[in-house]
Image 1 (cartoon, helix red, strand yellow):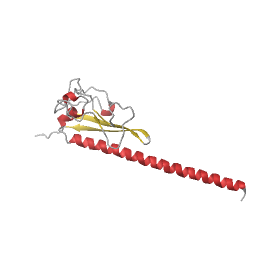
Image 2 (tube, one colour):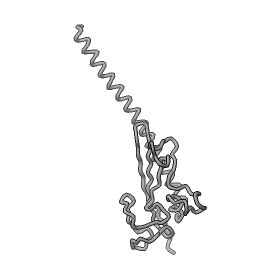
Image 3 (cartoon, helix red, strand yellow):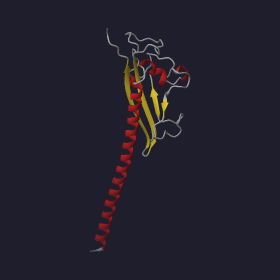
Image 4 (tube, helix red, strand yellow):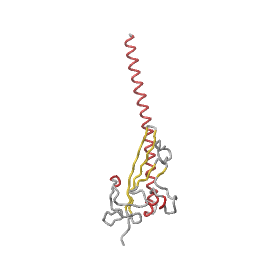
Amino acid sequence: MTLVETMTAVMILTVCVYMLSSTVTATLGHSVAQREGAIAADEAMNLFEQMRHVPHERIFALYNADPGDDPEGPGTAPGRHFAVRGLSPWPGDADGLVGEVILPSPGPELSEMVQDPTLGMPRDLNGDAMLDSADHAEDYTLLPVRLRLRWDGQTGKREFEMSTMFAKLERLP
């Protein structure tokens, strides 16, 4: 073998090793990102399930931003922000928590006139077939809710959102 052939073989081998190590590194990063995404999705689904087991008329008061309307007294409700075990909040996050419950209004009032297309707002929340600017915190039958999780992951800043609609359904006599 000549020196040129040997150097060519070493170069090809170096490129192959680099490509293999890059693939392994990317695969490991993707696995971590998938695990973090699964943690976020599981936490969102768990919180929605917890909310589903709360009496419908209390959901807004329990999860809005105003502690003054908490059903058991000020500061007793879970509130708008929540922690997620296994995920760290974005650097500089004001509340230091990963999760946020997003309702049509921050509380204590609930308005049908809020402009939020991701929640399907404006929307008739009390079922009277009219949109108005009245406070519907006490008489809503529909409540759109979005959960947003923002965390600082192994691959950088990540975000996950999930939405649902809670409805108070009653049987007709």
